[in-house]
Length: 157
Image (tube, rainbow, N blue to C red; front, side, top):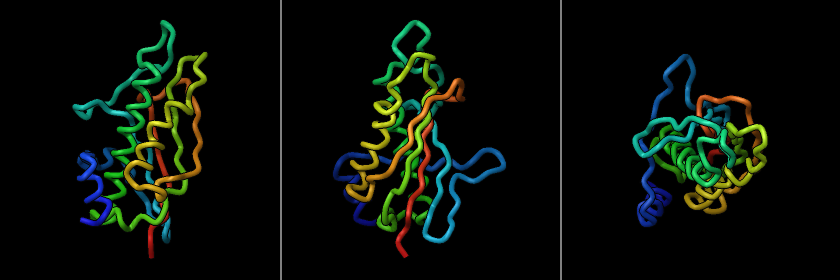
């Protein structure tokens, strides 16, 4: 394990177990020094996908605060996948380049950025400045989860 794994351990942060793809795709794809990680959904403490609309009104099943926690958890799963593709060594990460977060919001929900801050904050907490990234946040009319997050990472030579 590298320095980042030791830092995570000191902070009491445990990466969830890597979850392989279940269909005809892969969780990550490397192209040169870029590693593209597909979407990771927000899951509960039992590794079950949390479904439902995010918002504050009667049509919402997930509060924005809970959705932000789910986004943070999805970021931990992204890190688990990155670690898998880096042979267990997050020190191979040079920079998180871009994060895309999608929120399954109610029609009137506009707090997508605050929700995806949960993922951004977790990446910076775990990787420091290497976790800072450009970001896109958007909403969707339907998703198989309340929140989904993906990223592009540049790896060291």
